[in-house]
Amino acid sequence: MEEKHFEKIMRHGFLFFSLRHIKIEGLSVRITETLEKNLAMASKLVYLDLSWQDLSSVDFLLNGNTQHNIKTLILDNCKNIEFKHLFNAILKLQNLSYLSLNNINLLAQDTVAIAKHTPLVFYLGFSGIDLNMSDVNSILEYTYRLIFLDH
Picture 1 (spheres, rainbow, N blue to C red):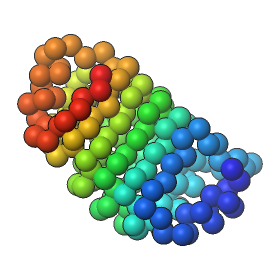
Picture 2 (picture 1 turned 180 degrees about the vertical axis):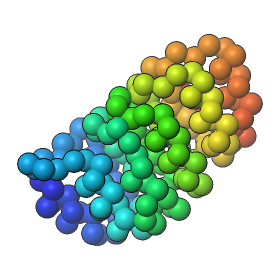
Picture 3 (picture 1 turned 45 degrees about the vertical axis):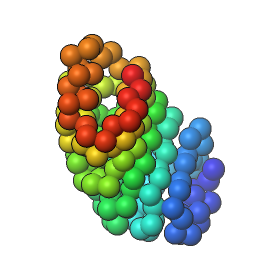
């Protein structure tokens, strides 16, 4: 998808947005800059799937109106995201109820820290992250509404 088409799509004020397996093309396009610029316009956004994107940060979630509304965040296979950036963004997503971080580079203690600060989620996806029973018990202890833990 070309950047100009992406920008046109973002202006429509939609609720659900997925870039799963879609690559944004352009000579000078950096995915995080493009998302930061365009997600600020998506004030009604509640579902965001950026799986398989080459992201090193999700700081763009900290800007604009999107942070208040996102209930579903899927970042499966975004292997370059650094924990500190991810954690800061998750702290700001106060309405988050579905969080999928399958097959990203997190340590067990990172998943426990995320669970501790997202007590209202009903789904946590940590598949591909090496968790022992103590980690799983800690996650379950911190999440009050958890229905499904994928690990």
